[in-house]
Image 1 (cartoon, rainbow, N blue to C red):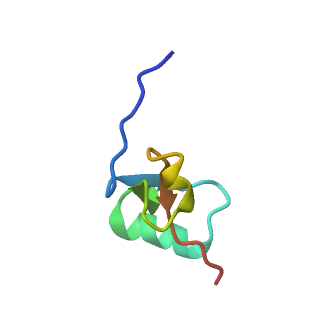
Image 2 (cartoon, helix red, strand yellow; image 1 turned 90 degrees about the vertical axis):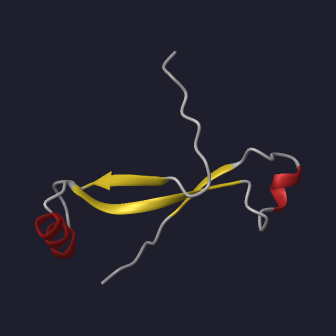
Length: 68
């Protein structure tokens, strides 16, 4: 089994682009000279999740999803 990551609130997850990118994804990659075009922010045991009482180690990735 591989090494397990310990994610903490505020950690960022970077997402690379793919072959079916929208024009704005390619623009982000070109402007930043980076293969990454999207990020998510980790939230551990958020207070707004009623399941935190039963799973205090619940880990979530919050991200935006939108259509142009």
